[in-house]
Length: 202
Image (tube, rainbow, N blue to C red):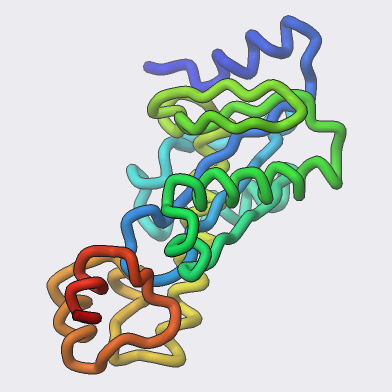
């Protein structure tokens, strides 16, 4: 059993109290923004079963999302498809994380950030942790907030363009999504630098 509090507890012992975990959702989709979250948890925070959002069912994620929203300080950062095309997805993910961190800094004196493998250059220390969303409770919480926020955005788009099936594939390149793209064409919000979209533009 991995102790998800290990990184946070080590920092608490050093007298660091305000620790944010940050993660992003939506690197792989052909459509829509990349969304990041930064979450600062209270020291007595408990949420049985919290882990990397990809390992949770959508129903569980929604329940956890509401719980984290209520019991933690969080910020969300969103970088559009247009911006992703301009600066690339890696930089856009970093940008979204910085936005999310800044949102948290408006609410509390954040002292330290644990990130999911992303080096971030800001005015407080950052520790990138490989597979951090499965090793740190704060990053796991951020992964849930980012994923559910992005999923909700895709469900909203789905109401406007139901024929694309966004509520099911969330913009990822599934067979059904690619078929819909070819049948209905590209709408605003596609990442034009991504392979299958690029192909269509040719």
